Image 1: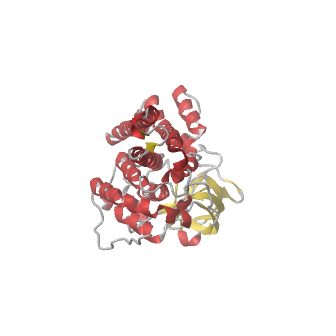
Image 2: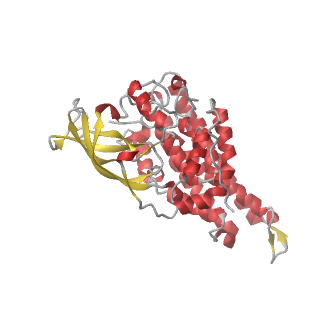
Image 3: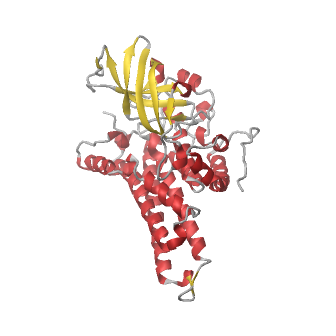
Length: 405
């Protein structure tokens, strides 16, 4: 029987990282209970969005200057981990929607306050420049179609990347740094057409539909680039900050799969051998190897993030990191995703036919992590970019290193 949960609107917003994390841990079992419903809906039900909002996840990147809890990147990742232990689709949408406070750093503070009067404002969209923005007096006319708009079905603002044109010709940056400038454009969700085509192997509940914007006027002040900080300078005001907590989803999912496998192993008997599974060498070895991989991968991801945060919090810039330190951050993203997939695959095989039923959470975790690993952060372009930076070459995807030029 599915229980109905609604957000407690009387609950005070969380004021600290500890409180946000505690609420995320408390919500995880509810998300696990609702996982099948979320998956069948192919989007987050409205009350689940309210429950997420109640944890404070959508406000966690707003700092004290806005009255927000101001979580570090490490703390934000922990929150996403906790939610992913319950349901990966919900955590994925939470991770995407929690970036509003980060994007606000690249807008004029007055404009950001007008656009985001509530710290729980949700932003979604695709940052890849897939649209066209024609310069007009006071702003731009934006048109295009974008894919993978995770959270687009419940967001307040949609941010989309587009190439800029003027008088029908590609617009070059005034400083000559870019022969065809691209920018990010913020549009209210009601001006966006959602294309209901999200029907996938995994992350089915994330509502990551395509969407269209047709000849919508975007004021100058509602556009941004990640190389110009207009708000408070902080460790979250860097070009790649919006991607840092992305490791929380695979880590939380892998932890959930490990916890489940250990629970199953503890209660199972091999009928042919007449032996408890927990006493079988094969079982013991696989569980231990997966735990070792998880612990090492998680430690590496947090260590890279922490080193970056420490340098930025001390007033430094990304350029103050060594090439090895800077490349470690995106490499940790990729390694986390691929290791989580390896862990889930091995545990799926370990539990054998108990994994294949759709009622088994292993079935969903395998599909979710397989789908997740098709994201850019788990692709070879990250390896190339990190490797190029290590040897002084040109990264294909420089923004993963905080490079915008």
